Length: 215
Figure 1: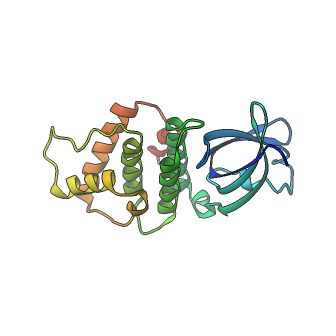
Figure 2 (figure 1 turned 120 degrees about the vertical axis):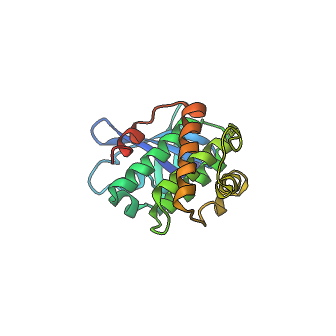
């Protein structure tokens, strides 16, 4: 069928359109962040109902119209059901997708950001890693990927383990980010630095973070 393209990505946002349709925002490997309409996705029994939920990762078939995309089919590899069933974990996930939505653009090369988002969602779903550590890693690496990382702070004395961890996050490939834990005192320093950098460098108010910080 003319105009059909296939993209791999994750659903960042979804909203109802009309009586039965959905509009989704998808971060894709091939075309950056795009919006698409999923006709009939809210009808009972629709094959696109589950495929257009938040956090869903897979391959999507889209009809490329003149000014928009229409989703025609999907092959989902991860629904992240366990994360969606965990109230706190779901809000961490929503915060991560908000950051990805804020940073990414259509037709940009967003492969590293997509990879970071997917691996971070998997880390949230892993019971072996504390969510606050996953958050620090995600925030710092997102800043790195977008070329805004200022380096290790030099205006204060940090634990050697904290300095090592920051360097590891900054220079390691995404696939190797979530294979360690840290002591409480290191995590406390990481959280402080990450919060400062998000405030000073990103400077955006994320709705899900406001809720997350009340939990």
